[in-house]
Image (cartoon, rainbow, N blue to C red):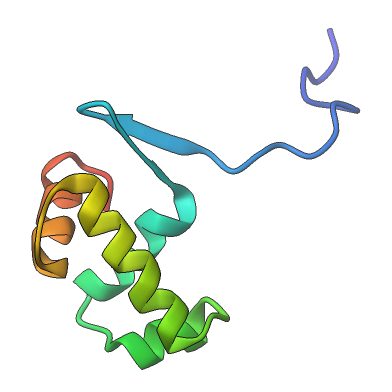
Length: 83
């Protein structure tokens, strides 16, 4: 039996769903980097985004999770073993 993914084309990035909330791999990476204590400017450089884009994405994650602060989003993800 061959490799089931062979020739199937590009695989979309994984999404993690918990509590009915879905965060994609890039969202989780942003939270993980910020959780390590990296400033937004360093995170932005690491993921090849602008500072503004990182802040916008984090704000969207916080809204999706129903939290007001980035640290709350990081704790939410950490408690679920996502970061």
